[in-house]
Every structure is written in C-alpha cells, then in structure tokens.
Image 1 (cartoon, rainbow, N blue to C red):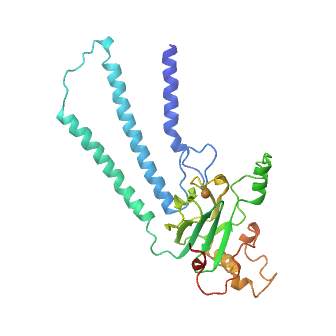
Image 2: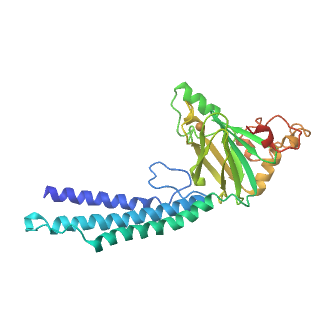
Image 3: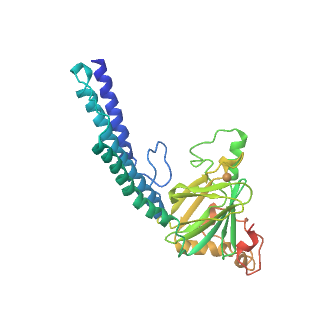
Length: 313
Ligand SMILES: [Cu+2]
C-alpha cells in the first residue's frame, strides 16, 4: 500500500513538472521570481527563440512519453514473475532502420525552422539606426552612430554604495537592486536598430533577455546584432561574460520609448544643440532625462565626423 502511494505522488509530481511550461506562458518580459520557462521577450527574435524552444520542448515531452511508456509496458507486462522469457535475437534490420530514420526526420523538422530563425537573427540589413556598444570594466558605453550622441551607463551610485557598505537593501525601495543604471539606453520602438558591439579591456557580453539574444563584446572585434522592440517599456539585463571582480555590477537597462519621444530625447542629448542654448531652456522637455541625470555626454565635439571615429580602437 505504501509503495503504491509513493508511486502516485511521483506521477503527480511528474505531471506538475510537465505542466509547468504551460503555467509560465503568461508572464512579463523580465524574468520573474520562480519563473519556470523562458520569457517571450518583446522582439521578433525573442519570440522566434521562444517558439523554437517550445517546439523542442514538446518534441522532447512526446519522445519522453513514448520511450518511458514503452519501458513501463515492458517492465510491467514482461516481468520475470509473470514467466516472461527473453527473446534471443540480436539484430533487427527493420527496427534499426526505424530508430535511425525517425530521429533524423525529427531533427530535420526541428533544424529547418530553427535555421531560418537563426539567419534572421543575424540579418542586420535595412536597419534604421546603429548603436555602438562598448564594454568596459565595469560599465557600458553607447554611441548613437552618426548622431554625435554618446552615453556611459553604469551601476546606479546608490546601489553601488549599498552593495559596498554591506547593508541589506530594502526590496520595497529598490525593487531592481543592482539592476539599475545612471543612464539608461534609450531606444525607439518599431525601429530596426543595429548594434555593433565591442569592448575596451576584456571580453564582456551584452545581454538583455527580453530582446532575445546576447552578444559577446570582444576587444579588437566588432560583433553585430539587431533588434526591433515592439512594446515600450524598461528591459533589464546584465553582462553575461565573466569579466572581472565587478562582473556582477554592470547591469544594462534599455528604455524603449515611442519614436517621437526618442527623437526629443536624442535632440536633447546632442552636444551641438545643448551648447549654444545654454541652461534651463530645454528643462523638462525630455521625459527620460528625469530618471537619467545628464552630464555624461562626451566633450562637445564640433567636428562633423560621426562619433565612431573618435571612439574606435
Ligand atoms: Cu562585463
């Protein structure tokens, strides 16, 4: 009796595990506590990754049911106590063909759409703007290429102070503890944005899960990626390559805003526009600025050359 009860519990647990991905379907872009499945994200790439993942998951579930079901039948129906006698054959050409061809077909069926999605992820053509991402120990720099706008983005100073003081942060006051920066990367929605990604010192990796990819930032090398964010919002990520002692403290915060809002923000950040009109005039115009204190622009560079010339290498 006890035995039977134990089995029952195990089956319930197995069932709950299999249903878990279903429960996780309704979720937001950023990872949640106890989230059991990957998120759908907010871009076509992230949706593609999610779809490919779910296809693979359900294929695995089906194969698991068939294999373990067959094993269960074999164990129960052909057990020794029932007088089963093992068959003596050692080869069966038909069976061998079937268990070779069927997995190959399954793999092809999965690889075909996955390859198409992978190719799409690396197709940076027809992008409307380019952001150069540079990893440093331990912060990020973003250059809006051709716009003469650069920002550095590092761990929020207050978060940095708390982590070094040994205090326990109040989760109510700091819901995104260690995941907040001084200057967010502001991006427009519904715009194909190309990223060129590199690093200045060691290898970092730029990763915002909601965008659906991560890309290594390697000194002396330019990696490419692109995104087209569908939903305005704030999306957080982190450096995903162990890059030194403060690897855990170089978060990424993307603030996706409407195209109009982005245009206003970009204009407010241009050194050429900011310099002559001096103080006060534009105050309060750009909403993103409230959260992101100014003062990190590069020294006003009167040259017409795009910002990349100054920051390359
Ligand atoms: Cu890093």
